[in-house]
Amino acid sequence: MTASSSALRAPADAHRRASTVRFPVDAGQVLDRCRTLVRPALREAVERTHPWVGEMAAYSFGWCEVGGAPAAASGGKGVRQALAVLGAEAAGAPGRAAVPGAVAVELVHAFSLLHDDIMDGDEARRRRPTVWKAYGTGPAVLAGDALFALAVETLAAAPQGPRAVRLLSVALQDLVRGQADDLLFTTRPWTGPERVRPDEYRTMAEHKTGALLGCAAALGALLGGAPPATVDALDRAGRHLGIAFQVVDDLLGIWGDPAVTGKPVHGDLRERKKTYPVLAALDTPLAGRLAALLESAADPGEAAALIEEAGGRSAALTEARRHVAAVEAALADVPLQKGPAEELRSLLDFLVRRDL
Image 1: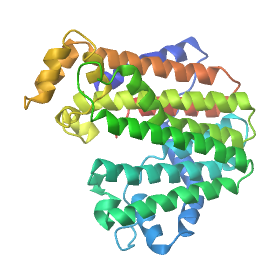
Image 2 (image 1 turned 90 degrees about the vertical axis):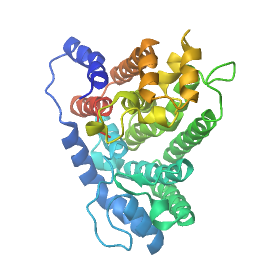
Image 3 (image 1 turned 45 degrees about the vertical axis):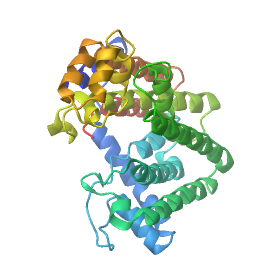
């Protein structure tokens, strides 16, 4: 565990000490249980599409190699499908009630990754070639489109289908807004009136990352028959979780241990990404020096040290803690079943103390 992620545990730990004593929950076991519940329906949905498109989708989930041979590659942790299942269970319904929502959000997440990899030019994901690299750009776009269509079809056929589709539509609109802002951030200067400010980043992160996390938990609650207040509270929790997740990712992208993250040290600085610690540091009197370093070919270690000196690292930790506390507050704001609520909190800890 890195120093950054260890420090983030304080708010959740403090909340637990202030509450009744709880038994620790293993997030890995929670994720395994939810994946086992959802996987058959997810596979069935993928099998409904064109065989070639279905192969690309299966490849993206780690189920097969190029050409269709079976594989056992990592298809991701399945956090969003788990949030949907736990959303239903927290509302007092069986987890299976959330399966259509879990399948839909997993399909949308996969769709977004296929398109993100193309936009970002990323050639590898989870230590395998990305779909566009393995099959071509056009086929990868087509596969993403198919996954999106399957997601809508799956939700529309579920109980509460129209309301569920509306929830997903709002999240998708926000996801697009967040992705558009993230792409535009790369064209803006480091300093001056047109620079990217931390509050703009916060909005981008909520849209790009938090919207689908919130939608997942809210869909589970909706399909589980929860009242609107509970659905809204879980959506808020997921959105704050998304911001905390993204800020922690930024910290790991600069100071994370490569042995843990799988990414090179200072990798985000080498790529000149406008991450939260950088933007916070650029809001200080050291902005001029930092911008000069970022625009030069200097060792990114110098920029990392200056960002820390300017308070960018501590500002990012504070920001992540604030949103972790907001997640806790949203979960405490409505009546939830105790066991599933604890499992939801275990995923919160997992996402801010993670190996991705």
